[in-house]
Image (cartoon, rainbow, N blue to C red; front, side, top):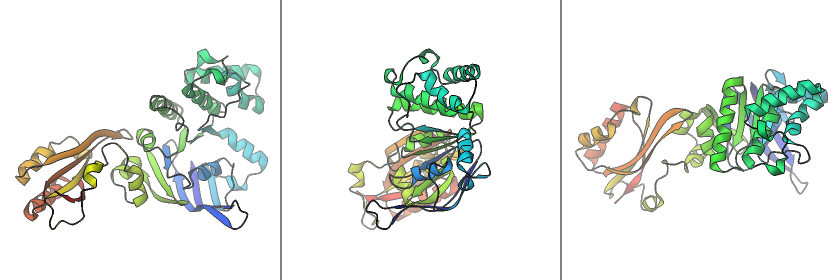
Length: 346
């Protein structure tokens, strides 16, 4: 649905001297029909990247294609036509305070020149879709944050787009409301076959909803793939840093501070085990204890889902004696367990 080909974007710095490079040569494709997440730290280039898709920004060099159409080659009229096919929802909703819910959703249709009857039919359908049929005559000031975002989603869908862009759409919402908005986006993706491209710094959002993910750092895509694969086996240091705060993946600070990378004089080795696929439902820990013939302590762990697939993470410790470590490594190799030595300690 979207292809970035050698895309760079530079801005003049605030002092007017020199340039700031927001994107440094992005090559990435967004598959049709999928929910794709772009994650990265603040200032990594996420917002600039998504604003190139609907022509709100133009690249300094490179090409941006939307369903085969070169956005960078479009005239102003062509951009207006493109924006009818690319809906966008925003972090702070961007609703018009002087218009009712109905009229906020109707605005793009009025601009497009639809008849009053066609507008009413479409708006009523969309308000029913987002669960706000009873709020049609309310004004934004009378709505909660989640309700405002539902209005924003309905408005973004009004022109029947084939691509929906989400710019930090849940970061201003509480966790419960965030989940309800994500459930709505997932249903829209499934029922309407709409491609969704979202940018966020919230790893939980991507873990919950996105089937594909790309990690951006310093204006470059440094890692990309299926969300499950990237989250369970991150390769780039930026990805690992972004994922470090997810529940169950972080070693308790009190223990982490005591660990060392030196195995020679340590009493125990601390290891993270990752369970997925065929390993997710096997009694591997009891087998590991039996195989080692030694005490195994469970430090922390979690059972969760990533993009709808089961996933487990467990941090354990056991004696760092060479013979025991060798038996553990042989067991991991035999069973296909994914492991990471976190350090050594008392």
